[in-house]
Image 1 (tube, one colour):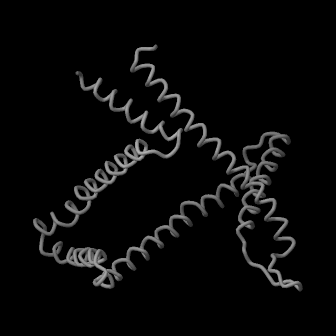
Image 2 (tube, rainbow, N blue to C red):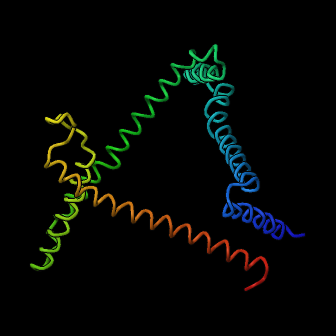
Image 3 (tube, rainbow, N blue to C red):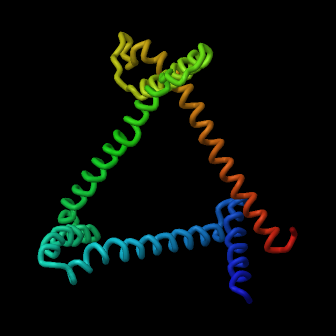
Length: 223
């Protein structure tokens, strides 16, 4: 048997195992999922060991200069403390490392959201009103119209996530009427966006299905 034929048979069997979910959750589907998760976890662990733990920690500790060894002592101690989380009795020793990881992750996430999403979105919204490229009144009107449309979508969507409210006379908690109206418009923009995203996901899934069916046809020589 050629390697290509063996790979094709294995891919065919795993495709059938995944397709077996169409008849409900069953052991065959679980076997495929367990293998996928196990292989993925093993691959991630090997990459982390070779490209991070060994190359950036242990190798410099063994072969590096005295200054490198001194600097790497801190992450080595923090890593050792993190391993204590596996023991219920020693789990408190790993809290400083967890606090550092959570704090750094939160800072990176917030900084990335501000610099990578919020500021570019503001800049893109402002650039929609750039009328310097307009060569006629019709183009000028189209640019302004598109800019107003984008600005309305961005503004109303942001207002939708404004959760400030006040207590009314009947004891219920509601937002201001104007905020409610703007938030309702924002919900329409959100619904359109989610619909487009769902259509994209469905299209990708349909493409994958067609690819698998094409694979079956190629494997059995149907075309």
